[in-house]
Image (cartoon, rainbow, N blue to C red; front, side, top):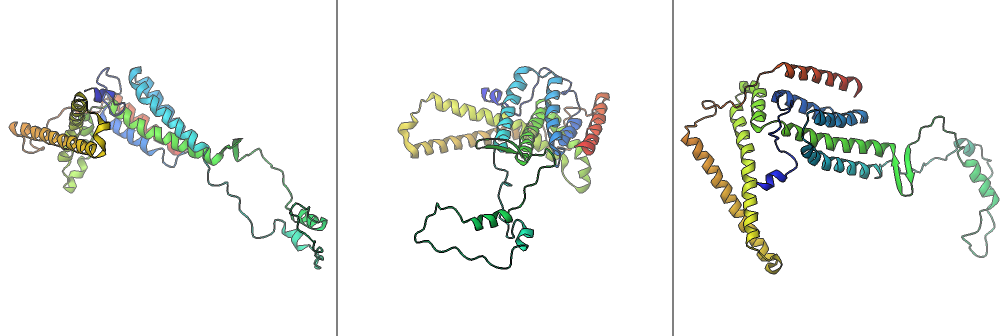
Length: 328
């Protein structure tokens, strides 16, 4: 199962058990939805604050360094890379419009009614010849007077050579980078401290009012539980097939494109057959144990009871949303 241990995201940390493990899964689902919903239409300061809150929660929960360094490190590098790429990209507002009307309409109206005589034609054309004095004076009159900037506001934040960072590109870079980190890492932190059975139990409890509309909530929760349990089996079968191919020492360069495709199709067929066999074994095991319907054979892995620490987390969540509405 080396493939499962090498995956950096989406793993459940069994040991050590931190205070985030002891939280009720419904409370953690509420916090997760809050982290996913509050960045919408939020300011850049609030988005940066969310990133800081996630990092502080990771450090305060005393998750081992080997775990969050592998999961948070690459994600931070990806967020910084996206931030720098979007910051130096064109913001779309640097297009120079050309007005149809004169720049200085007052000077244009005050021109004399008599049209100046055209310059005599030259015997030969010289593109580098300077313009006549009358045309230069007329162009100077029609220019709009330069106004001094009343404040220290600058649209261009940084510019050196071809690299140009504007206020709009900087704001867009902060939004994209922080949103990428918040969406991925908040979900990963939830899966890191919540067992798959707790996730399904919390979802089933929160979806209980949907039973009034004849929605099979228990069947949905059971299907989700089986799918979460089936993912490691899929990865294990895939890893076993890869190891079987490596032991045969196939020379892919001599096979050619056509034979390589045939080998890949045969491996995919074998993988599908093994997965169907595993699914049939799980179904047979459920039938042997007398499983007929989820409502009659419910297995409670966890008793969902809100404790004192859970209520404290809900109170902090209320303050979190109040701060978002007031300052975010």
